[in-house]
Image (cartoon, rainbow, N blue to C red):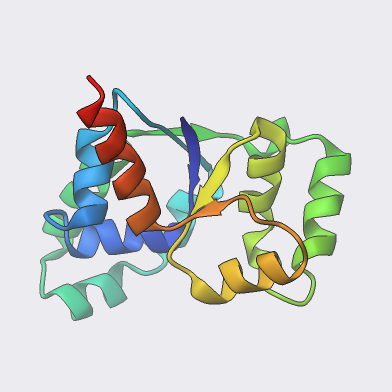
Length: 150
């Protein structure tokens, strides 16, 4: 299954590489293909200081965790998104969070779910009839069911 990863998932993965998010990111390559817009890297780099403050990790440890996570994500240029899809995605997010437009656009363009822990985003999208999201718990359960069938 292909999944668009949003910045809060990467942020959480950096904070705790040994948690469920880390487990999914590092141990799901047979079942899941992670994609993300290129801008996600810039989003995360803007928050390095905050990541250090919250985690107590050094700058080098943050960069190492980031590197390990990014190895498992296929980054795609936002230019790959058709303009009609981009504008439709902007319209959906106008009253939620326009900064999340790339995630919805990628979900529509590549016909996959958005993996997010942003409850406001998930709730706002659902209120507008967009249900193509998946939570960490749902993804974890899905992967475990797939693992048990082998």
